[in-house]
Image (cartoon, each protein chain N blue to C red):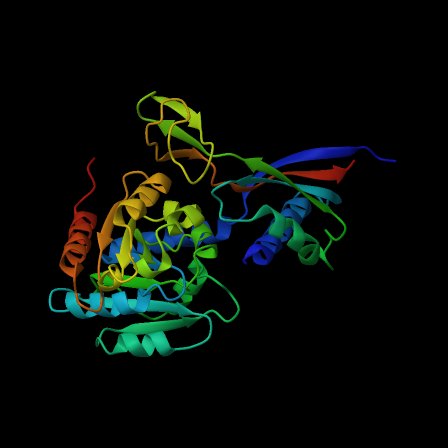
Length: 226
Length: 115
């Protein structure tokens, strides 16, 4: 009988994705386009928020979107109403976007004229957390109808995001949404996280969020401090 | 549920590393799995046999080492272990601590092979 032996390795399992994401990030940076992704559970209002963002940013900026979905092109059709260029990524059975899917979807697309590119992930609060897409900002959404404890149930994705947006604020009173509890829960899993409150339906809170995006774009174009 | 695709990546990576070292016969694959990796250990273990089926790693075991989250406490100015991923506070002084030092690992750490 031979003796078992341990061979040390040290290799990141998602090395290929991380490598691709880094090269995408470099490509976005050199094209001067600011890339933000949206993650949430299904039905939190990613597409509604994105439609509003694309429409409202367009007078000032050149915007585009990639949208991931398991099976349909419905979201891309909805977003196309904003007149912004939109491409759909149909993932089939895959429950999240990966860097390679983003790269494929960008094939032949000149990014230089763009200011913003938004990537809408598949509705899922678990799997997208593990995959870097090369974005500079990850936005996690939770709607008031989902309850205040979403961050505690899905701490990993909230922790992987840079900013939280609470959506459907026009329904907050009806569902007796507790803002203090929600705020505490978000800060508990991601201390210091910026939180925005918006209603894509009424437009409430949209201006503050758009100003935040515009300031992030401006920052990203300033030469890095040496 | 993306653990099956993660398991397939693990098998692929382990196979590559074994081949690169002259075609080692792998009995077990050691994985470091962070509490913030976004991967569920039980689902991963469940998927591993399926992923290894019909590959040179068929019959090998997956051995998972849980890696807890460590954060830097801005008040203590020291690394601290996090008790729960739901509460990013220093276990010693209760100060919110968001700077992650460890806990996102999804890393092949070793191969157990026949000598």
